[in-house]
Image 1 (tube, rainbow, N blue to C red):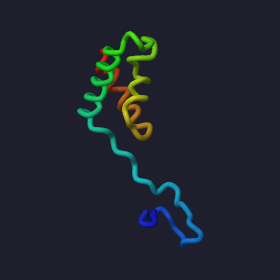
Image 2: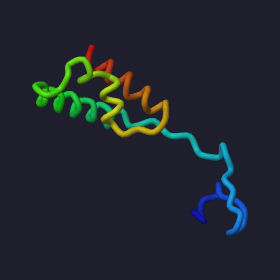
Image 3: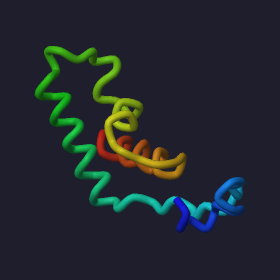
Image 4: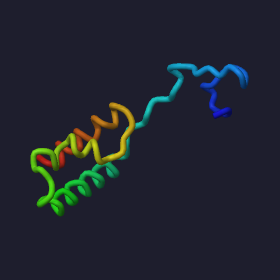
Length: 85
């Protein structure tokens, strides 16, 4: 934490600088495609236990695949829609 440049001030009065965080890069498309295929195969294997209204869906894929930020979430949604067409 002390090496993070967004923290300013002395030890007694730490302050966080807003807006200086670097943007989150997009995920590797091959990684996203592999994760979506794994999610869909897991849903197929557990189809007796899952509600078909909730899985496999784009919202379910977003819940299962690790992501940070809106851009990566939208990347997962687009990749899921392309994989299911």
